[in-house]
Length: 331
Ligand SMILES: NC(=O)c1ccc[n+]([C@@H]2O[C@H](COP(=O)([O-])OP(=O)(O)OC[C@H]3O[C@@H](n4cnc5c(N)ncnc54)[C@H](O)[C@@H]3O)[C@@H](O)[C@H]2O)c1
Ligand SMILES: O=P(O)(O)OC[C@H](O)CO
Image 1: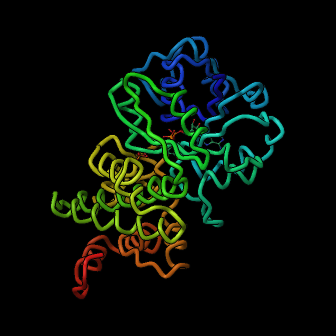
Image 2: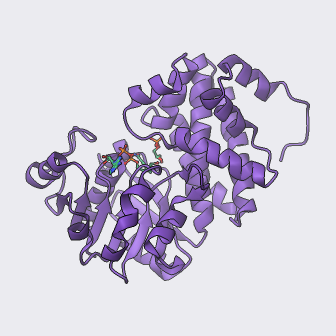
């Protein structure tokens, strides 16, 4: 398939490499002219993936219309808070038959909208051509061709299978589902839970604390998802538990690292500056809390992360707020 990937950061560039390894020609869009030249001429992207040698099936451009021309598969990997601003004016350049895939794991602040919903809205993409790919997919491992799995969600299963086929390589095994909202919620909420785990580990707490936050965090994701129409089983799968385990356990996760810095006493601004690339949980946690509160869903961990990052709650009080609560049945 003729593929276009929008966003040449960690995941966009790594996903372009997956598509190229699967035999597809790929055009990678970046807003940075020097990066486009570097990717096309030298087959590197030193800012994001310093050790990688990229396939010569990948070329890059800053010209959005040229990047989208003739695309059969359009993949978007931008930070969630710039998607609307960067892409809204380019609807007429998206080929009418193209399949659009969101790789993003975030919720838009202000509209509480998931990324596939933003893309469908700004580009007028029908549900049967709009897909989401999510799973335990740390770019830093995949660019080294370490094996992993992922799931493509689309209401049209045949479309999900086409996308899965287009990115199948010996190191990237892709499953399919029709539960689009479940994949979206799993990907976005696990970032917030990884922040909470990172904060606890930054304070110095160990594996019992991590396991407790992960398990109760998955329960928050599942409750939010089901209230939005997701299937509960999705949260036991790759886009739920699978991604949660990878993100909460790995030092490669930006959300985990950001949380750990906050647990050690950094302010949010200092931690964001130190990480230097996208940590979606910090941007999405308030929208996720909004979504839960609007539906009367209890999300204590998400609320605690918002309180620490945005309302000045001291970290030790976050921990006691989570632990010192009356007993009740596990749900
Ligand atoms: N990195 C991963 O391992 C990984 C894995 C799965 C999903 N994701 C998701 O993919 C999305 C992108 O993450 P990433 O890791 O590639 O982020 P990144 O920070 O590494 O890269 C972001 C890219 O967006 C570009 N960008 C930023 N602001 C822009 C603007 N205003 N206009 C145009 N381009 C702009 C940057 O130049 C860069 O190319 C996120 O939603 C993330 O949650 C990341
Ligand atoms: O580095 P993070 O925390 O954005 O996580 C990357 C991926 O989402 C892991 O699947």
